[in-house]
Image (cartoon, rainbow, N blue to C red):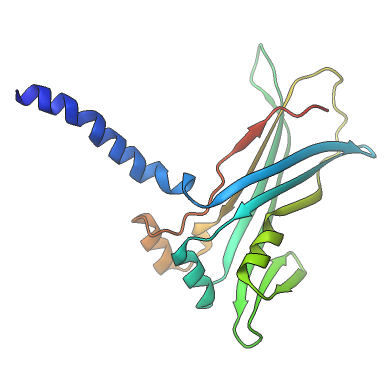
Length: 186
């Protein structure tokens, strides 16, 4: 009797442990709605749109003055049957989202370019919109098979240390689309 109970509880326990370790990343409120990879004037460009919804704790931290750093990460590979796939392009952009209480505005910063928004939803919409991002400038082999990967996530390692510690215990600060993979037609 005991062995049968143990055997039946083992899958439940395993699912619980896996849910704790991987669940928050997939339940983060980041969804890729569209993506397009195209060539223009010898460059490879990306258009995409993410729908981003901050978890309650991340939204509260932002409103209290914590700057949230986000990363858009793109990778492009040539597929190979007989060897490892060849990485052709790897690009990354970092955004910082902050709340300016004196102006009651949300500021989205990419490099030296700053844009202000009245609501966090408008700032998150702008963060999730990728338009004309040059992700590569190498000639592509005609007829070759390629794979593109795109990810948008909150860089939790850039949060204040107290939030980093609470993040380790499932604090609801995970914002991650996970890798979105597709085979582009170029």
